[in-house]
Image (cartoon, rainbow, N blue to C red; front, side, top):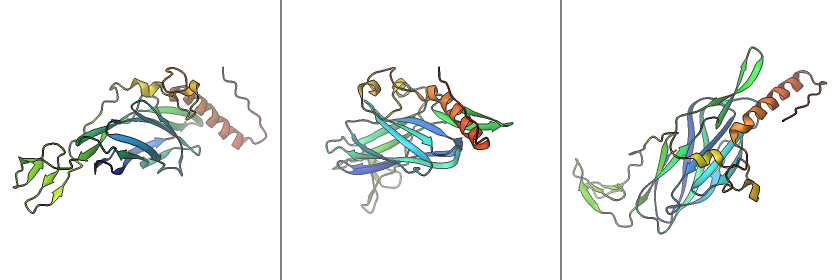
Length: 238
């Protein structure tokens, strides 16, 4: 997740990318954010040519599910989406984290070996982005090495010539995927808003781990139908 800086009241866009991806067909990830700092607006679908999107809002963030539009993997460096927020007018100055959580079986890839097609689980490393809310009036109370001054609240730096800048690249912590984020595994995949799929009803709603076998069956059926056009296959899900 990228790192950005903004003033209170600003609109921001935070890119989320998957780098060095060796191939995915479905990916499901959760982004947490501080609702006292940010107001969620929408997810910009930057990979809509390859994926369908489903977005669910939760108590402390959002869950994004992206499933492939065609039978095949997408690999390389993928710009998954851009998270669009409004920085609240009363947001305190300082740095706010945007961690991404991905659990086991939340990312699936298609594997074909010796004519057999299967769906395998992938668990990539994750990291946290940041939103630095700048002070309305900086406190340049930290002396720098080159005669500059740094604000102890938001990290803005005042150069010798009086110009002010912010280092958005500093302080990007890694986030352990085993960190407390169990609600990401329990949240529904569907974007329906009825009570059965409400995120507050734990245990109701599908998990990605549940429908990976179904995805595998559909993929295999599609490939067989393509090869044997007149054949009829019936899938029974117990």
